Image 1: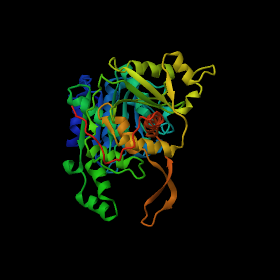
Image 2 (image 1 turned 180 degrees about the horizontal axis):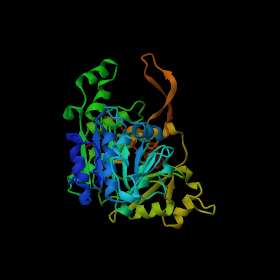
Image 3 (image 1 turned 135 degrees about the horizontal axis):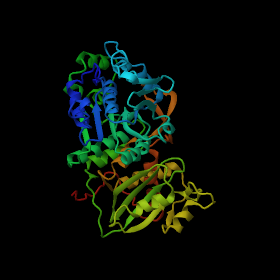
Image 4 (image 1 turned 90 degrees about the vertical axis):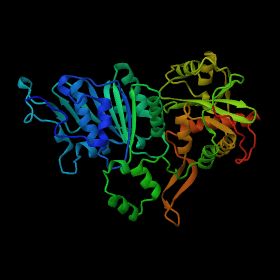
Length: 465
């Protein structure tokens, strides 16, 4: 009996574009590897059947090319619940969508499933491909593999972009593919990746595909169910996010919410080109085990222009300095503002050289910003944002980080209206690093008298190209 995949599964009509993008012919037995799409972002509403759809797509891809495949969830527990213990609306287990030896016999090699491990949530099939469920809360389990296909499920609820940073070089090296399928969770790292894929698709880059499926478009959710959510107390903002794929969800406790809102209202986020008449400064946040982030900035009169941004994971000082120098042949550098902890020993070095010394030996001279109270730095950043313009395309991840940079929530304590209460201490998450890098720049400018005390409602316009 020939192998037919998907096995007993028919994609819903609104899921067909993604199937067509990743595998256009629908005929596994012909061995068609699909078209050129290797990067897909699917923003789908809640209850759209995302996980079952991706699970079946993975089975098809596993049969097309032998290799390692991963289905990654925000946590390992969620992966077990969604896939290993998951059932469709008719009570059929997700794992039953893989044909067993009763449904398909491959002669002497036995059934299609060669081995299934419940403890590590992995399945090996007859052609040698291996499928495994992983959790983004255990990133070390992602490292050291050589995946050729990856699904990032509910990527918006990952703690940050670390997993994508880990798998990207793997996929680039072996010609692999990845699909993000998620509902939105505000303008965070997932939003940044979506906007990047969408822009590249619009520019005709054939490897990129993005789509948005709202409940009002698919009809997959009974309006009565949404109304029941509303009656149960779900806010209109949350309904718009969960069912209509809206990114416009306020972040409770955000340090820079008013400033970022004003930037949008005054059209100060858009295309902000590099001006070759002025030098480029950089603002750094350097991690030892955490990621590192750099902003590229120009000061033009009273205007502060953030023209570029980059984030790195697991890179040492030499690699980062090389990346900064190669960022653009047109950048003529001024000052490089670094945090006070540049005296920390360099990553991977066996000797006790500080990072500022390592940088100096490589030809980059840091202006070290003295340590000050975090609250002072946040206030300096607010003042900086009052006269700042940001390039939306090059700084998308940094913009989303500034939106998501928030206060730490008081656990178990609520206000009189059951609202959350917050400390003045920042919550340490992925957004901390881009926000800390900008804080370094703000404090450096303040220390060198380049940061004006400008009211937030005073914002001169820059010509958007």
